[in-house]
Length: 131
Length: 387
Ligand SMILES: [Zn+2]
Image (spheres, rainbow over the protein chains, first blue to last red):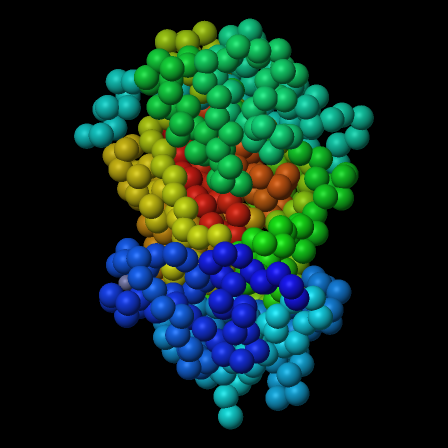
């Protein structure tokens, strides 16, 4: 890719995708946030630093999808909102140890980040149940 | 009391009408809306010539402009195309109420029409997304069906946190259907039991077919005006006692709490302005896009405590003869859902307060609440009406 994926504010997140899950951390109050913004949602401070997240979290909610939504995703598969250990929530896919979507999970399950390769975009952060 | 403030201003709904409903052929959205607008204005003892405020969205680009031209309302003094989805119409009443009270317009026409069913305009993909958008980067790659997957996650969280059951969600659908059986205009009028609802096809756990609203053609028109102008109405006009609106999120992961909606704020504002509490409400028109939407609204509007919505709807409390008659037209679940239900909720609320709802009339209904919801349970607006 010649042009950075994402937008002016999110590009660093995508540049690290596949290697590290980056979150913005406030230089003043220490709050983490996602998705990226140019200011701290918690305290309104301007200074934020990109920091590697632990990559762990718990399932906040989830749904098993039984209908076709995207050509590359064969139902049933589970979409979840994960509460990251650092606080922010992310929408994501639940994958198995083979990296493929499909497995179910329960709210409260511990999960860790994995990366799903894409042909036209940087790897997509997805989550699998922690061992 | 705050109520006397608004009684002094005296803002009324003086006319309402549905568009053609169901599967509409031989008409366009514009011609459907024109017919409903003229009918609502006729109830109000007015014509299109009287309209000086226009509150419309989702009928073509630029909100009110194309509809205004079509209707011949070419020099309105006040126009509003607030874009908060199904909640826009109760918000329009809020805005029209303020505009009319301040003399910025005198006859406000609110409404909408859609042929989403005959046009086959709905899909679960949630529409095309701009590839640079935040949704395209952080949400749509995950294949969450829209809007149902969003509501499914809220339902799953509510079940986890409060022990809400699929049977309790089904009770909402059953209540809507029992009302629809009393409404000849309702799309789905076959009997429905909790068992039948639970046997339906699962779409996005825990939501099944019966938890989802209809996809039909339809729409409505509503006329808001001063007490003085409402005196010439052919039917009893209905007082607007209060209104409120709010919003929470767009991306699902940004919803502050999946069990609390913008209705908590919109109802606090509307009920506060009206000087009422949930206990004063005789008939409720909640936005039943999904069964869980109703459950969350019941809690956020204060009809029961947070987490108790499931137990609250058991035993037919919302159904005909129940303690809180709700979705009395049959709602979006069984009567009609044209993509944005809010205008139809206002029509039914007005008819109940006028006492003209026929077989489904709630005896002695004096105070009605219409509660709109939009987006992915992102927005809410609440209107309190009284005889
Ligand atoms: Zn901060």
